Image 1 (cartoon, rainbow, N blue to C red):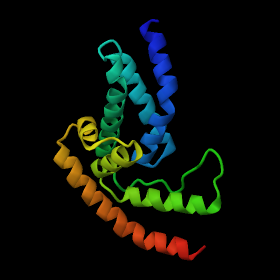
Image 2 (image 1 turned 90 degrees about the vertical axis):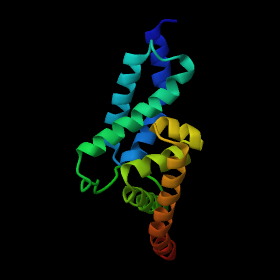
Image 3 (image 1 turned 90 degrees about the horizontal axis):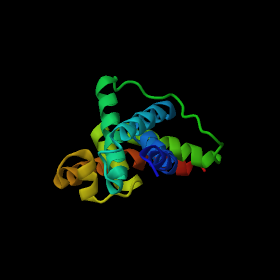
Image 4 (image 1 turned 120 degrees about the vertical axis):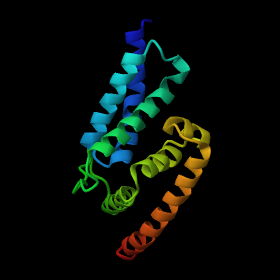
Length: 165
């Protein structure tokens, strides 16, 4: 199998998960699609240099770096007004999802990346540190601060959401 076929198999197997991760990072499906395409293009260009075992880690790091680069360029005031879903969700799940996305949006880009990598991608502290290019201690401290901020934000929102049911 040549490199192009191997890349095509990788892209087919991982594009959906990369897109979801990108969405959790940025909160916008269109930007998530752009970030996924940027990531896959970078992986394709570096395919011959990347060992087969390192491709998923390279893709995650590229995705996070692309997200952080986009956040540095854009104003923090740009937030999507509504999130369009591909298929309808139950009403209570839609409200919960919006509350969770709003809570994620309160985090700094790096803190949001730490939370998504640790708790959505289920990476270990050392794996997340490797993807982010920082120390394990930085991941731990950013994680703790981000979770405290999310708990504070979600405590009020979730109480309101649960009492409306």
